[in-house]
Image (cartoon, helix red, strand yellow):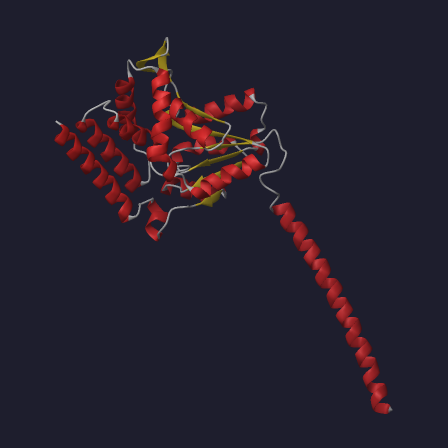
Length: 303
């Protein structure tokens, strides 16, 4: 009996300790959940009508530059010659290899595009833009970025593309992706015909930030509750406007800035080198070079 008397208190003590441990664990879990909830609020917030999302296009939503893909489509339709195609192909290859925008290349591409479309009807280019999206752009949409945009849409928020590409192209892409709309560079037209000039300047860098600010004011959005996504350090002004900036497939300057500012980063490129500088797979480079060579050869054969 003495032995049993010695064991009984110990059993009771162990049970009490178990209860205490369980209660402490439950309380710690509750506090931890509360802290995580406070630190990482639900985003995007469902039903927040004063929040919206703004997505850069080139290398953020789509691999490569929309303007260069558009140029390929126009060449196919005999809007310009082989020399212009070679320049478009070189600029696109450089853009993909470097993973950053070269202002001189982008300006040359815009000037070329403006001269090419001069005298054509806006309605004609809109129709062609639909075809070119199917031919060259649809398969180059980043699934990861597309999912981010869809999350905002599912939350009941509006989503806009913001790009230096022509607004006609941007609008086609936005519509195909089911987005709200697009902000893009506006080419001047008179009576529905392109003049070969721009209205203002390309929607690039600080101009993007001003466009987002103006749209937010018109749509009664709270920029502090909005999100913006881009791959380029040129878009830091736009990213800095919103409460939720994201660096997507970032170039080196944006990556450094994002880490310094504690912005969120997402990289949907494959391979260790691609994650650093945006170099495409060898097959991708080969496809660009091969496609250009084939187009030039075909053009010469027809001549």
